[in-house]
Length: 520
Image 1 (cartoon, one colour):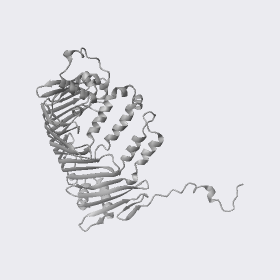
Image 2 (cartoon, rainbow, N blue to C red):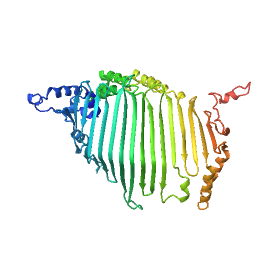
Image 3 (cartoon, rainbow, N blue to C red):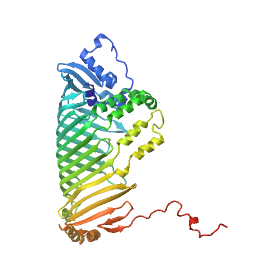
Image 4 (tube, rainbow, N blue to C red):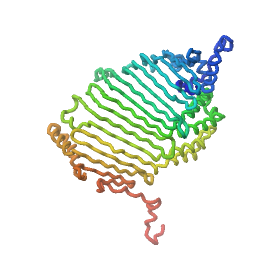
């Protein structure tokens, strides 16, 4: 159960300040039922007694089990120095025969505050009409085996002296699941969908010398936004234990960080960090938006679908990440754009980038093995140098994935790669284009009214001249940048290698003295 509370609660270190004693805490009348008391003892082993004594957490009996109430308003009020209204969130917990816990709650989030910063008041409001959650939490995995959340009528308002933002979401649905990973930790999946998103932002530009007062309005709409992700082998129990370790020592850290880390806590922290690595084996996530629309005084941008995919490896010897972005159904309507631009503006875009060959495990191992919290700095200069040297760029591989940009007049495809040789980068990029003649013709027609476009036409014609025709009618350019500084296109050298610096001492004037010369 302890891990469930950690999942619900992100208690800041400030909570570990010495609490004021609660009156009559030792009286028989104040003693809670044994079930509640046992659960509180379990939670305190991870969270300390401070959240309970400050009223952030409360445990009470409930007909369906035990009720955990999270009431952060007093703590947040102390932290911000101004009143915070935060409606308490209640969850009913019931232990199952297999040691897992049923968790249920139906309190909507309702937060409002108006802190002052530099003499100016800022207001913040976050409110839901309804919210419900049900799930099964596994203490051994420190994750929900299954969980489902639904919310409706979400509204977020933020205001300050020069801007106002209002965001609304008609409905929210979230599901999650977890199972043990054979190599340790948990495999966690999640899915989330928002429907009916709208955000309006108003920015007021104050009047200044020669500049009149302006009010600029922006509006973003999306029919739906969805996201999903998978985390393989996440070290969720170790992450929970690390968080709990830091929280238990938060008071000592706040009083004297150096002294706290120089004691037993420092050794425990190193062990806990080792248990967390590699954090996860693989993390992948994607997010997309349907019927995205951005309105401003300058025009309207619509995107039929926008999608982003991410992947991160864990802390390993061959770590890396991938990023892919796709936009389709792009349309721009603006009184600032001439009519001739319609066939040149992109309608679809696909971009991707990947990096691999990054050794994160070796530097992490050196740092954790060599760190000594009793010293200042904790890592010696020699250890710092070894950590830096462990990031071997010779193994770095960066890839520009096959991508494209498509418009009515043309389409561009590209890909490439970058590596490091002798501590110097070298790259190869392939680019091919279809419809270049149509794009040039469009610009030539527009140049009659806008002569400055002839410069762009000239640049495109030069690029066409060095392009290599393909059998399919497209033009291609293979650009290669060598580690020696040379640059070539389609095998033709455009820039030669950089001058090679002479070895030290070769430029010594004495070395050029004629044979037999003597100093006078």
